[in-house]
Length: 192
Ligand SMILES: [Zn+2]
Image (tube, rainbow, N blue to C red):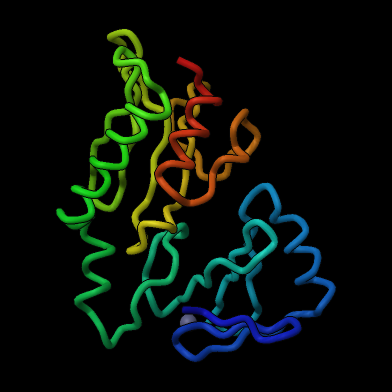
């Protein structure tokens, strides 16, 4: 895991350290309350620190070719674990997801005609909702190797795409990197 070194430095899993002014870090943390913000250092091997909800949540490392929203996974010396996060969601995780979605449908929504339905593509979990027979996209979660740390993207009907940068929608306060949080947010963003 990337480390924060008090007061304003950050150490990547690869050993690289990024140093910033204390004021800069304070401002970035303040700005990150509602959305993810990115702070790049100016080293030749540029690292980008990702802040969210007032905390550093990830460091994007140029030595690990990852999509911008993927949080840190295993270092290079453990290719097995990295493969699991880049090639898709493992079957045992899908089993857990199915149970979580089912549980939410029966205990939180409690309307058999209004249910979340999961589907998968690579490392993405898509949550659609079937409301009275009509299936609609709600949000997309990206698997980072940790069930409590999904990257969230709401579906924007105006753009007809998933947007990880969009944080101004009703229910966004429920987004807490879990599947339950995403479903709660989706219910408020797109009421059944
Ligand atoms: Zn690095």
